[in-house]
Image 1: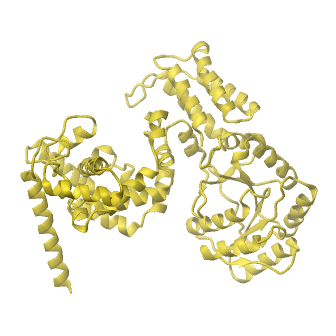
Image 2 (image 1 turned 30 degrees about the horizontal axis):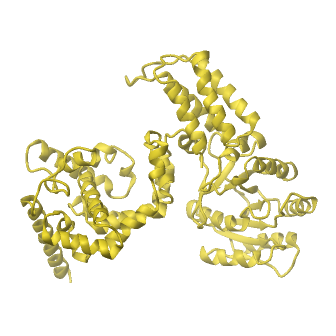
Length: 533
C-alpha cells in the first residue's frame, strides 16, 4: 500500500550513499525524492512540507556519530533514515494508543462514517479483536435503521463470531442505542459497539442524528470508519465529522488495496486524531491495532517484526506448532510439514505484505517483489497434494533424476497436479534446501531471542542446529541430504550429489541410510503407541 512512499525513501538513501556527513547541499536531492513520492502518494501538501522541514532541521542539527558504541559504523545515510523514521512515527500518531475504557459500566464505542465505508463489517471485526486480545465481552447494537438489511447483516456477522446483537423493531436509532446499553448492563457485558447509519455525503440530518445518539449514550469512544482508498477526501471527511462529534480516533479500512497511503500519513496531522485500527482484508480477523512505529518501519523498508509475529500467532495452531517443532528436533521434516507451512503462510495474508514486515524487506528490489505471486503457494500445494502418502513421508524417493522409479514418480505427480516435470523437480529441490536450512537456523535468529524463537517449541531446535554444526566441523558425516552442498546450491553454488541437478546416479549411501533411519524411527514410534494401548 505504501509502495510509492517506500520507493521515495529508498531513492533518498541511495542519493546519500558514500556521504560521511550531512550538509544542506547533499540532503536537498534526498528530500526532493521524498517530496515527490509523498505527493504522488496523495499526502496533503501542508503535511508534506512540514515533514520535510522537520527532517531537514533534525538531520542537520545533530552531529552524525560515525561509530556507534557497539563499534558498528553508522553512515550519514543511516542517520538520515533514522531521522525520517522518528519523524514518521510522530506524524502517524507517536505512541500507540488504545480505546478509552469505562471504569463504571460498559465501555461504549460509537462507530460513525459515510455509507459504504464498512461500518457494519468493522463493528464485528472490532468486537472479535477486543474479545480475543483484551478479553472483553462485547455486544453489537444495530442502530442503522435506514440501510436495507443492515440489521440482518450485523446479526449474521454476530453469529459468526459468537457475539450477541441487540436490535429493536423501531426506526428510532437513539432509542435502540440507549436500550442496547441497558441490555449490556443487565447481561454483565463490558463492551458495547454501536453501528450507525451513513450517508453518501455528509449532511445535516446525518450529523443531527449522530449528535442525538452521542448526547443520550455518552460514548467513551467515537471512532470514524473511513475508506483509505479515497485519499485526501478521507482527511476532509474526518475533519468534518470531528467538528460536529469530536472524534476520539479513526479506523482506516482497505489498507490491503491499491491505496497510495496518503490518508494514513495525513489524517493525524490534519485532524489531530489517532488512527487506532486498520482493516487489512475482507475476513473478520483482518483488523489490526495500529502501531505507528511498525508502520513507519514498513514504509522505510525496515520491516515490522512485532506485526509479523502477531500475524503468525493468528495463523497457527499452537498445539500443532509444538508438535511440528518436536518432530523437526528429532530430524523429521517431510512434505506434510512443508504443506502445513504453505497453509500457514497463506492464512497470514498476501506474501508481499508478509515480506514487507520482515527486516529483509528493504533489501529486496521492486523488480524482485513484483515476481512474488500468491498463486505460487497454491501451485506448490497442488504438487504436494498429488504425491502419495509414502512420497510425502519419504521425500528422498523423489531425489535422484536418473533413477527410473523417481522419474516415474515425478512424471505421475506432474500429470496429477497439471504441472511440468521441471516444476515438480524444482519444488523437490527447494524442499531439500529447506530441510537443510532447518539445521542451520541458529545462525539466522532461531536462538538468542530471534524472531523464530518466539514460535512455541522452535527455540529447542537451536540445540539440534549447534550439534549438527559441531558434527560438520569434526568431520562426522554432516547433515542428511547433502549437508552444505545443497545450501551452496541454493545460493547459486555448485550442485550436491544428493540433490537434483547434482552428480549422482542412483540413491547414495547417505540417502539410503537416512531412509532406513526414518523407517526405523517409525517402527519404534508404532511399538511405543502399541505398548501404551
